[in-house]
Amino acid sequence: MFFRWDWLRPQLTAPIVPTLGPVHPDALTVGIFEDVLRTADTGDFLPYDKDRRWGGEKDEKALREDVVHQPEHTLIPTLTRRGRGTVKVFAYGIRDSVVEEAAELAAKLASVHDVVGARVVRPLGPDTPHPRGTRIQLKDFTTAPCPAPHGPVRPVTDWPTAAQESFAPFAEAMAGDGLTFLHTRMQAGRCGPVLTTTVKDRIVGAIGPMEIQPDAIGRPQLMPQYFAVLPEARGQGLGHILWRAAMHWGQSHGAAYQLLQTEVGGPSDRLCQTEGSASLGFTHTTAA
Image (cartoon, rainbow, N blue to C red; front, side, top):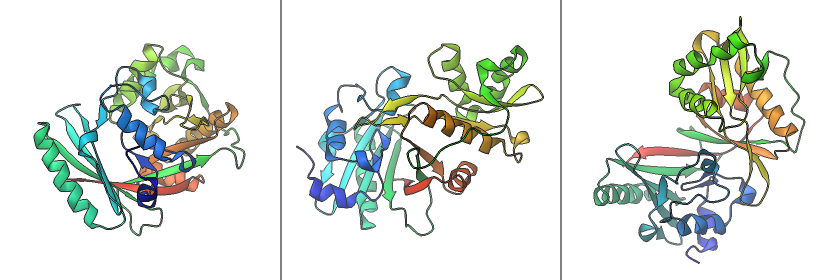
């Protein structure tokens, strides 16, 4: 076993795992970290990796030989060749000095692997004052019902043809939110339902795909979705309707929970907070 859990566990101020992203606190074990290192050179997806549904090979891998594991801090670097390439060093530790050491390691490894990007990912606890970056949120479906919303939400395939055909220009307009990628997957028939809302027979908002997958301890997890509303359609509560519809879908299809990542202070962050999601902590990413 590579990691000592009595060292690592106190350093995990937020439940984020390199190459996997957020995990449920109940599934946060030394085994997950060991699994990440075990698959570092294979290109395989772990059975509970949320990205395995997209197919292909795992793009990001841990740099096992460069891990720093000590009683007070742990540094786990990862490498992706996407674009011009990036090294990210996940800096686990209570003291702020861990960021400086992580930055030095990230810059060094970026040079070694001839990539442009060098980043430090610092997990921070849920009580962090004035947080920046990304919030990790948990929507627990086992504690309270998620009723179906009152509003015009349907799977895109359930709308009349004219509304269905409006999804393509909607996706193009919201390309920055990943909707063109989602549309490509929809056209290939390789994803779950996408919930949409319309105004005057034109799709103006979407959330999806709706898919459930077991996590590392076998609990059914509602997978993250792409989520967007056209700027001109905002302010009408359509985002809340879509989000509630997605949570209702997840609960009614047997999911135990969903984990979300939202930009602190952004529209999705405020929406999830007002809809009762629990904050599990934050990640703050900086250039090395």
